[in-house]
Amino acid sequence: MNVAENKGSDVLAIIAAALAGAVVGATIAVLLTPKTGEEVRKELKESLEDLTAKLKEAGASLKAKVEEIVEKAKKERAAKGGEPSPEEVQG
Image 1 (cartoon, rainbow, N blue to C red):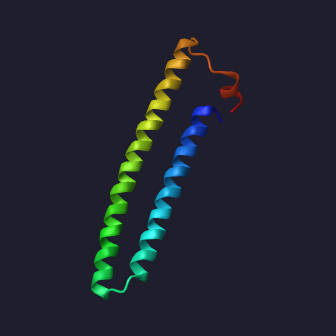
Image 2: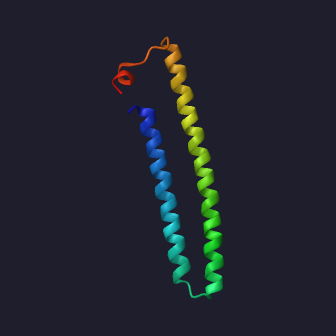
Image 3: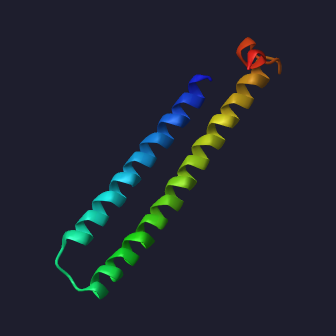
């Protein structure tokens, strides 16, 4: 695994942890607040819609980052004459 792959992995882990924390926090806040069932359902629905939007945004951001890393790797490989590095050959 090269440095670029590690960075992509780290970014994904950070995004996943942040989103998981947001979901847990929102769920606890909604469930512990004295409200009617209808209000709780409405807030949960809104929270899920917000989370869905954030996940889509995070996915698009991650996709862009991965595409950037891939393009950089292609350029580096082309600059080396298209030969794979020893690390790539070893797998």
